[in-house]
Length: 106
Length: 119
Image 1: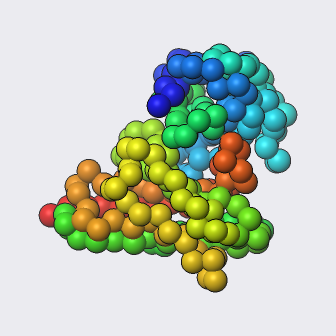
Image 2: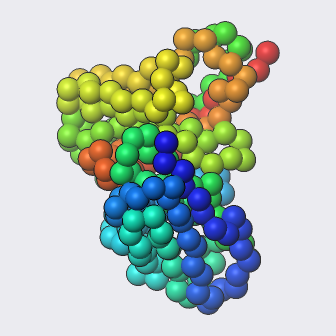
C-alpha cells in the first residue's frame, strides 16, 4: 500500500493567517492527490482533487500544489469555519489511502 | 440536489450480522462508483471498498477483503455494506461516498452511519 504522511499533525493558527499543510507519498502518485476537510461531527468534504483542481463551491482561499511524492494544501487568510481536520488521499493505486490528518486549531 | 442518504445508527452484539445502506439521488446512480469509508472513534479515514452499480464491478481494500461485502441494487439506487459476524473492533462511523471515476476524489459523502458493537 502507498503510505501517505501529513505534517504537521496539528497546528495552531489565528483568523487571517496563511496555513500550509504538507503531504508526502511513499512512492510517486503522479498528481492523483485529493484534499478533504472534516469539521467536528460532520462528514468529510472534498476540497481539492488531482492536486490543484478546486471542487465546485470551495472558496478560492484554498489551493493545492505538488507532484510525484510531495504535495501541499495552502489556506490563505484562515477563516473561523476553516478550523477543522484536513486529510490528503491518493487515488493513484488501489487501495486508496489517506494521510493521518492535520488538525487546524485556534 | 445530489446526495447520498445512509441508514440510521445501529447497536449490535458481537457475532451478529448487519447490513447498512446508502441511497443515491439527484444523479444517474449507475454512472458513478459508490464506496465505503471507515472512521474509528477519534481516528482517521480508511477506504474499504467500492462498487460500480452499472455492472456490479466490485473492488476491496486488502485490509477489508473477506471481512465485509459491498453490493448494490441499481433498481432502487441503493448501495450496501454488510457484515456476517460483527466484532467489537467494527465499532465505527461508516460513510458512503460517490466517486466519478477510479482515480477521482470522493465528491459526495453520505451523512454517516454509526455502528456500535458491544456485548
